[in-house]
Length: 521
Image (cartoon, rainbow, N blue to C red; front, side, top):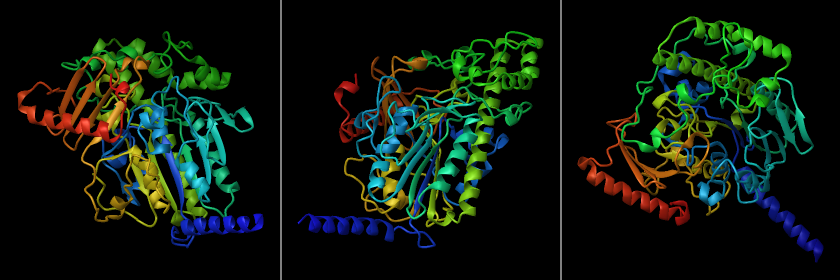
C-alpha cells in the first residue's frame, strides 16, 4: 500500500511539474527563468528610459536596453513607500495590512505565508535571493540566500548566509553582482530558476564606488521648480524632517568636513556603516577625492539659498554615481546571460522598492503618497513578448508583481493575492474586464524617522486624495493641472464632485482590500 501511495505521489508531482514547464518554454524549448533585479530607492527621474532632465545628464544605458528590448511601465506604483513593507508586498502580492509587514521597525516578516519563492520552489524552480533583504527574518522559500546584514554597508559589507555572517572586501554593488553570477554558474542547470538580485544602491548615504567618486563633480543638475517649497495648505508636509538643506546629515550624507583641508567629517550619525567600514587607505583616497569640493564650500561665500542648492548638487552627484554602478551591474548580468545562451528563456525584471525624491519639495527620501515617492520604475524584458512599441500606461502596482510572475510562468495564482496579473497587458490581449481605474496606498510608520504622518489614499489617472488620518487632514490634487502637487484643492468648491467621487472610491478600496478599522485611526 505504501508503495502504491509513493508511486501515485511521484506521478502526481511529475504531472504538476511537467504541466508547469512544458507550457512555459523559451525559444530553445527550455523552461523560462525569472531574474528579478530590484534596487533600493531608485527614482524614476534617475532612469533615462523615462526621459527626465536629470537622467539626461546621468544616463542608464544598460537598463534602457531592457526597455528597448522589452516593456516600459509608465504608471507603476508602490503600495507603501518604505523599504521593508514594499519588499513584503512584492513577495506576497498583498497590501501591508494583509501580509503583516507594515513598518520597517518592530516588525518581522512571516516568510511561511504564500510568497512567490515558496510557490515556485514547490513547482520545481530553484530559488535564490542575493543582496538586500531587510525584512528582519531569515529568508524562507529560497534554496540559497546571501543577504546584507540589515541595511548593509557600501564598503566591505557583511553578508549573511545559512553558515553565518562574513565580511567581504569590496564595493557592495560589485560584490552582489559577482555573487549573482557565481550562483548562476553553480546552480543546477537542469532546473529553471527564480533569482532575486537586490541592490543596496542607491539607498542613503549614497557612497559611490571609488572609480566614480568624481564622476559628476563638474555636472550641474537641474534644480526642481519646487525645491524651495513653503508647504502652503499642506500641514503634514510642513512637519516633515527630510529637507536636504535642513535635515541631511552634513558628514554622513553629504560627505562634508569641518573646515578647509580637514580630514574630519561633520555629523556622521552611523560611522560604523560609513567611514568605519573603510580601511585607512580607502578613507584617505575618499577624502582626497572630495577635498576640492569641500574646500570650495568654505572658500566661496554663499547665501543660505545658494548653500541649499550646493547641498542639492552634492546629494545628486553622489546619488547618481551610485546609480551608475547599478547600471554597470545590469550590463554585466545581461552580457553573462547572453554569453550563456540564457537571454531567450529568461525574463529580466528591473524595478525599485519605491520611488525617491531628488530635491522635489526640497526633499530626499520617500514615504509620501506624492508622485516622486509613490511612483516607481518598472521595466520587463520578456523574450516571448519582445519589444512593446507603446509603453504601458495602465495603473499598475507592486501588489501585481507576484501574480504577474506566476502568470508568466503558467503557475496558478492563489486567491489570497490582492494584485492582478499585468501579463495580458504586456501581450496586448483584450481583457475580459476593464483594468483598474484607481490605486490604494497606505503608509503606517508614524511616529518614525523623518516625521512623515501616517496616511492612506486613492489615486486615479488624473486625481489623488490623501488622508492624514491621525490629524484628519485631507489633501486633493488635480495632477493634470498641478503635476508637482503644490496646490491642495480639497476645499475648492470647483472640485466638490471630484472630491465626493474620490471619497467613494477610497471607501470602496478599503472595503475591497479589507483594511481593518484599527489601521485607519
